[in-house]
Image 1: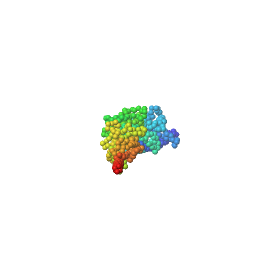
Image 2: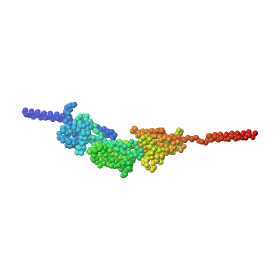
Image 3: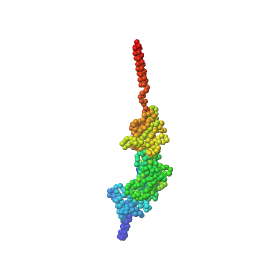
Image 4: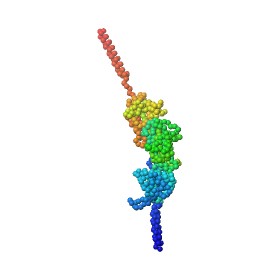
Length: 528
């Protein structure tokens, strides 16, 4: 009987222990929530979770003891097949631990000030999980709601989770401890983006501009295919060329140079050397870097540069802009295009109104001849280097792309009336910002030529609006960015004829009459 009581007591104790364990387990399983947030990145389209899937991978189970500052955490590796191998692979070959404590300690040791080590661990775990089809602990399935920027997982066991989002947008994996009903993780948006720059701020017709597009190698882990295409569109005032000398294109392609910005980075792929020109629009080109970025996954996050050239043509204007955008995604049928990165390289006009001085109504003067000079480094007129221009059928002039061309001239002539819809009768297009001297070489017939050259200075806009450029004039006036030049009629100089001659004639006759009078008077006296 006593033996039976002892057995019953042992069984009862075991049952109570099991009950306590079950209670503790029940309190831990299915009571935790995780809210996953995603936000937009600067300069890229709004990031949402629509059409994407969130996968959770529980790396460690977590148990807690104590409260407040005395709270302790115990971690055990997820026993689901493949998880231990995935963690070990992400920790690298230097990790030799075997126990739960050693695995947890190795992950804890990755903590650093900028988070690069732990982020690498997260990305490497994700790569292993995707490549080995590791079973996810929980999934959102494909999210279909529009403009969704958050998703909440319910009924999660306490643990240390990796959050990974699949879909058309680049979002890095994140690690988070889930141990309450209010756990939250804000995903780092790492959507690919590009920036574009030019080696010149303002340009004149005929100049060649070097453009540089800067991007970085995206993480394509787990994607069977990935598109990464740079699109570029020129304004009508620019033409693609093959080099800094302005060599013409051949075979509907433009030469490009692709290289890593950082010295010492080893290129793992076949570097593209040409971009394709659109068959219907010569102002558009596309550079497909899809295969190259896939081949360079060892250089994820590394910055690279793409350089190419364009030449300014006679159609260039102040709003002479160039823009590049990036098309990317893991689904060719559902790619994302970034907001274009725009570069402004304006060129400027010089407009002149030639009129008779003090005329009312205003008299427009034709056939005034001018030559334009650039300023020297000392700020003086460069008499030896007049600017050459070409003339169109309307009588307007443009900076000559080839200053030595046979049809280029330094002689510009005003027309008889203002150009239609304008306030000027002499137009010169295609000048870069700077100081110039406008010299009148021949005045209209009947008018005096200007004795001094007119100094004009064109200054680039300091605002986002390129049309806010300014024109300042010395030895002249400017109204609405038009140089107004007045000519005076010539005055009649004094003559040797006229009244002066008449006076001398009359005086001579008077002397002769007086002489005759005295002659005849003297003879009469003598005869008496």
